[in-house]
Image 1 (spheres, rainbow, N blue to C red):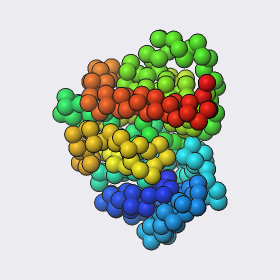
Image 2 (tube, helix red, strand yellow; image 1 turned 90 degrees about the vertical axis):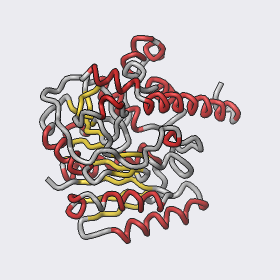
Image 3 (cartoon, rainbow, N blue to C red; image 1 turned 90 degrees about the horizontal axis):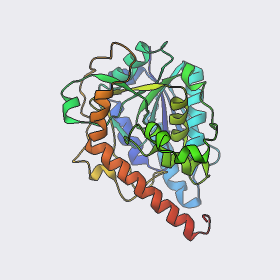
Length: 311
């Protein structure tokens, strides 16, 4: 199987160049089918940066590449939905990468082995390259199944993506407020997904990821996560769609370089590893990201209130 990559870029040419540089160290990248989706600028002020991003993509392109420049700004949600659908339709799977990621040289090997191993396992919806690292889990280079997903470097199959709708059914407000729903939807505190879903249903955020997680959750699905990272995110800063000056990676004791040098063991059965999940919830990464997500939600609500868009 050749890797089919769906790369999403926008107005950060240096970030795209850094991602492509890390991919060039992956042995499978030279033969990969690559599609780079570049969103259009939201304003004239962004035109130069988007043009430079397209230049970076074209300079790196080979015969196996397609570069798709959006005729108008789609936003990340529409871009991801359309782009992953396109690549899955063409190749049967997609390895999805945004331009703020850096990969280990073993990352594509990991994704391809995971895609092959679970191709016909309907309960597995995605293979995630990022993980919440815990010292005890890092001693064991393996993968685990948990009822969640993560947007920082992941792969899926056409058979899973075809079941995903752009708009998911609305979760009733009473359910969203219930402690039991939040407990399970947030994976017992691993994330603050229920807060994001609430904002999305109110039209205050436009997130593809929360709807993807909602679909996996509603189907009783799982994703496969490694115990050591194959992917890191070093671009949570100025210029991103959901960017903030508050970069979690500046608080995570240095995670610029992915930590996994080789593909570890796979779980013998598709069962949730609750012991590993307990450790992931205790990780510094998870705690910081939950706090920052909640702070970001408060900041967003305050801004909307000031603009008169929230009552």
